[in-house]
Image 1 (spheres, rainbow, N blue to C red):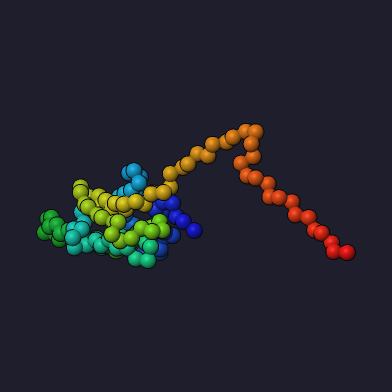
Image 2: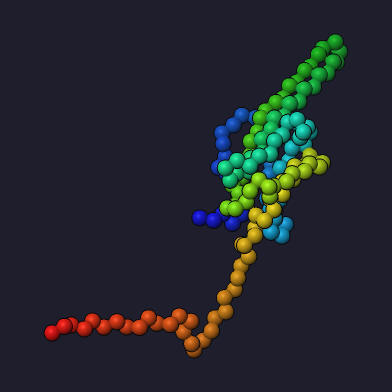
Length: 142
């Protein structure tokens, strides 16, 4: 069975947060965009190809401290995430590249849509496109 496009895998029950993701087509490539603002992608995010799946995982840690009128307020938010996308047959790790800009992790999967173009078949009239098989007759021996 051939997968013609990247698609998210079934959701995994998890604790933490799930960053938004979208998949767009750019020629024969697929570009997966994952919103991870405020994360240090060099430290907190990994992109892997594992058994025909593109896996993006990471962890968000956010600590804030504030003092006001002699009182201290400290908030700590954290959570891990994992997003997984099924890759089309024949796509290898070498076809995957990633970049980060303005809070968006962009992952390009080169050739993800290669070979998926629609081909229109011409319809002719008057002449059968498929020749009928010759009839076979059984000859009984006397």
